[in-house]
Length: 140
Image (tube, rainbow, N blue to C red; front, side, top):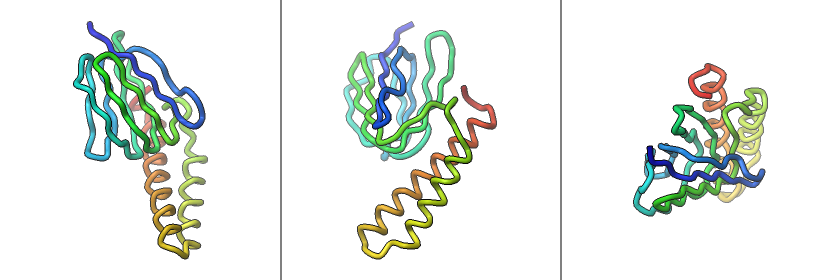
């Protein structure tokens, strides 16, 4: 079975590096599926779940908080603003991030502050949804 190299990096460091047979990512234009020998692609990511299937049938989940996805025929590179593996999901931390983002929105005075707070709320909501899904045991 053909495989593609997947590297996920974020401000926190390297999140994942390994082979995959399918990668599904939350692109801003909609969810994209990438298999080996995919046409080159460069696209922005929105906050959400990234799903990976390995050749041995493992299904892995990652949260990405936005960033860039680059596809080459033999390699997928994700440069995420923030990212975490599904097994690192922490509901209390995600809920706190959502609360902090909502507080920032309340204190936003300028258009720039409002836009930044709105982006933080979108990411916090996506992270909380991801964490709750992981705790429900739907992905590993």
